[in-house]
Length: 313
Length: 299
Image (cartoon, helix red, strand yellow):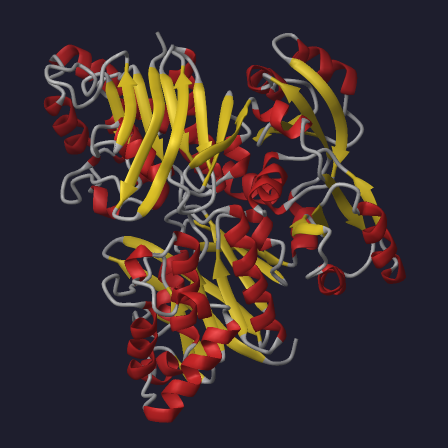
């Protein structure tokens, strides 16, 4: 932890009375995959836009790739790549022309431009689609083109704002293989996602709630700190009717659906498998109950879910 | 009569066959998930069901009627939430709901009742004065779903309703969908989230224009012949490097700190051998729907 390439100090953004980003402080190491998680509207995209030099902070400061985002936004922009939620590709151009357009924006010309495009096309495995019309590409492939466009000028840092939203499971894995390769070759990756399995690849993860950075640590430490107790995973059929009743069992901290399963988290020592089984078998069928380790999805539900419930109350 | 029926549906775009003979039915009170890789034909199927696109051949019926037939009631009995749901950005939550209530011609009293219920279960009641443009992704989707539910359709089509929605809001949207299904609504939903597919009553796996597998998610995963295992011990990146490119490996993904892998039938012996020098062993686990997806579309 000696080589921060991103440093935010009491970074703040307000829109009128609304505090979108509330005095956020953190740093990101060179070559790190840094995950920035939170509910919709928590302030993740606003933070990214400030770090990319696209939006002036209302307070505090941030250094990105050695430049102050408030004073030197142009220099920040040329050192980073940014893939936004609604990435802006020209749908009526072929893929290759989108790459040329973005390379041109970053000042690449002639042979250097061709070399840069060939390199990024090879890197992202985009070769077979170079001449396809961008609008005709399936979502997963278009996502990869957007990534290629944001990498064409070989930035030191890449900001990815929900890069895999709506992408199928197989394409998501392909995409993350590229991300891991990038990080392994020294590119710093700053990423937001709502897929908690992807967040497991991050060296460290920050969690935002209502503009504040409320937790920041390695996935392992986050699980230890925020998901205490013992989690039992119930699998079977027709389990959702038992879900609410499970929340009322003594010693139960949380009961949440996880796909076809239900995760019931007990305070340590109060786990009661027999009672849990009886409860779910009232309306369904239990195939198995097993101990499972906490995941980042449990962390997210514990940190963000709690605050949502408090607000609703 | 099924609430929704598709009979040998074909839809071509120039020389591309987007949908190549799909047949399925959804009953009242049933939640049916249509999943598959991007470009598999799911959205085209939904567009045909909603009467937004004419089938090249075959038939679709909503409550027994074709959506494009003259005098058809199908469209009134149908709710649709497309991927890019267009609410009025300048209008507030309250005004958007009012607009859609008017559009569906709901009597004032009925509108008030439904509005109150939807606002309460979506927890949007405190934000009714906020403009739609100023809503977060999750809140926007909740409002869009509320607008699609206002006229209490018999059949609801949802095209990726939770894209970009955080894990907490996703669970809230799902409990809302479940409420309406338990009251008898038939729902057909497309989703890229396989944990959501696993919560449907039945799922159709759509690939290259066809439904290649259909059934209750538990039956489909029970029938999977591939092996699924977690790798215990070893360094995750080192394991990735060893496993990458091996023909027995369909997919590898993180499950907590471990790696979860889908292995071709009979391939686990070779994999166990390959990872043993890294100090790692395999632990068989029951397959999830996501494992099934990866195994079925890998070919």
